[in-house]
Image 1 (cartoon, rainbow, N blue to C red):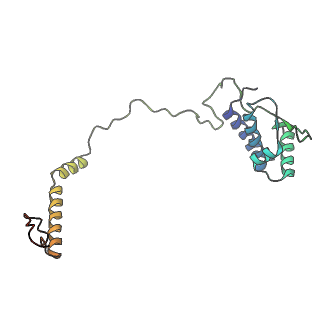
Image 2 (spheres, rainbow, N blue to C red):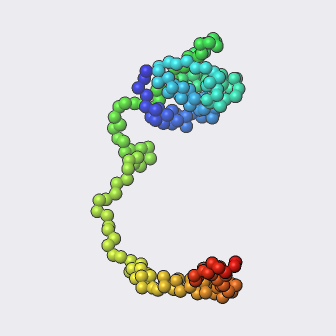
Length: 186
């Protein structure tokens, strides 16, 4: 079992993919599928694959495309492919280590275009705004002093009176507002 950093390996291999003009999306899809199987095998130095499973993971529908791509990846030294020709055993794959150096980076802030890859630093002494916006203060005071709530209640009462005057006059037919005389017929 190798000591593989998942992220560093993928970053390294994708950087290599971007430089290689021979590759097409099928090669990349196949490599990612094999990398996933390698991960499931705990990054063993060699592992065995089932063609149907790999084709399913990589979404390759043609056997000839699968065989062409895996042989080309092996020929271009992205992996080592040893076909088994035995349907019960599976083909042997050895993945190579890309970009997973354990050494310390000497100049982490330098890049090819002379920009920093580190976090931007902000000065500790920031300007603190202490002056309140006078417009907002005046608006708050005006809102507090307004008769907004009183006007709203007055409007509700006026609307209720207007509705009553337009509707049928109220008659206490069941005589609920006064004591009932139970001797009266309904």
